[in-house]
Length: 325
Image (tube, rainbow, N blue to C red; front, side, top):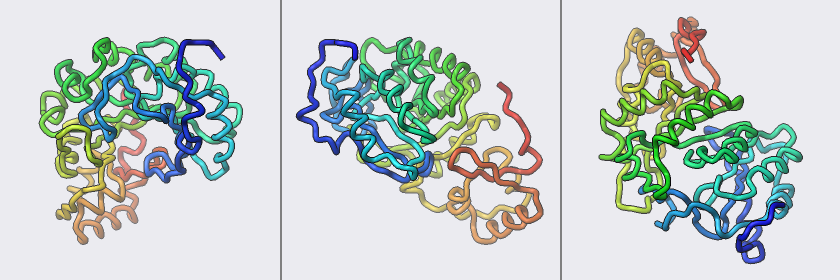
């Protein structure tokens, strides 16, 4: 292992804090988590919506655990029931200085299990991190805003980080990466949920090759006094994005049922603009509309398209339609 001046906290970290789960994730399947900063929060962002307590941003990890300890703990918990090994952290996992070595070590023992990282995208500007993430089976990049003023307000990044640089690297990464790429946008009331910001996000997303774009909002108590938006507002925002984008509404914990009435033509038109999951249907459609949907499924006018662990309902007429790259 490369020698660098870091304070080892291996002995002070409880081993069971490095590995957590498995958790049955609706988006990613049965996930076994690896916390790359188990001692405390180490992040280059101090996001308003973070579920962790506020903390000063850092450009690198000062306290770390060894690759060997992580692998030893992983081997105790890894089995054939696990779909994904998820690299995350109390903070930003790509700040872990031995990330490349760790990914190689996981690849040597993971078998058919997929590897996934949850990152805020900022360190893609580091060529070493960029190349390391190319090795993973799945990558989830956050992109909450694309204008500098909104980005600074919502994500509160380290002073060295500029959103323009991040966007360029995300665009480049999406063209080169061969795994499953997910983009996540977390909406905060009054900040990035404006028409202007959504339009700019839409324009950037059209230049990114993503397997899925997840729209979410605040589901847990945030670090700062900010509010999320409702499921209904998320649904309305989703229609502001181009229909060619693989948009998925991820936040449903506090969703209120809408139970509106749709005739068959309206159902087909809605699914053409924005494919929905069965969970969406449960929240949006009344009983009569659900029965109409079932009839359309029986007649083959609506089909189910599987994307990762999620199943989307789409009109049969556009099931073969390919997104323009």
